[in-house]
Amino acid sequence: MNFTEKQLERYSRHITLSEVGIEGQQKILKGRVLIIGAGGLGSPAILYLAAAGVGTLGIVDGDKVDRANLQRQIIHFTPDIDKPKVISAKEKTEQINPDVKVNVYQDLVTSKNIMDLIEDYDFVIDSTDNFAAKFLINDACVIAKKPYSHGGVLRFDGQTTTYLPGNSCYRCLFKRPPPKGAVPTCSQAGVLGATAGILGTIQATEALKFLIGKGNLLSNRLLIFNALGMDFRIVDFKKNSDCSICGDNPTITQLHDEELPL
Image (tube, rainbow, N blue to C red; front, side, top):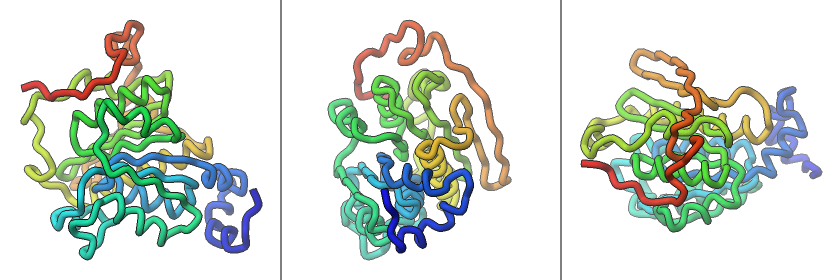
């Protein structure tokens, strides 16, 4: 593709990087990334991917903007209260970068729609806030052989890993969701807004590295950080041959909506 003068100026800091250059920026502009959840993690991920020039962004979220979201979900502004999050996010994305095509899906992910949602995208970002969705996204991406970034945040803590087909998955780490009520929600325990921003930005970075084919992704590695102490550590983990979805003899062969055990 031929770059316009405006595009050369817009992406000049990327093009200057030897690891990106013209070829890498072309890959970004042709890339397709699906972000599931336009909240605390999805907001910075969407903003940075749009600014980077990812050609097509898909945004999935069934909720509307609430006043309590504004402390951390930075893609939404006060006038957006009661507006569908996908519409609010699309408006900001288009203002940031007219090069980006934005597809919106005002819905929650379920076992019935997730395979259709992820089908046309190169990379998926899990920015959801509940365990049922996280396990469903993992299972769908494993079955569809789609790379994706997992992210979770609570209080001052965050964790993220990247799944690449053929490598270890989320269920290799956590076999099943925790018992209902065992882990508090963000509304119950709170979350420092900037902590969500750190994690969402890391997820966007993983997506961009995947698109340009450079750097080391967090495959087979779990990045854990605590923003209060500003401590970061990486835990290496291996593919579990007994994993119920990606193991040698998987027991999960069809998608189902995970019910949290009591």
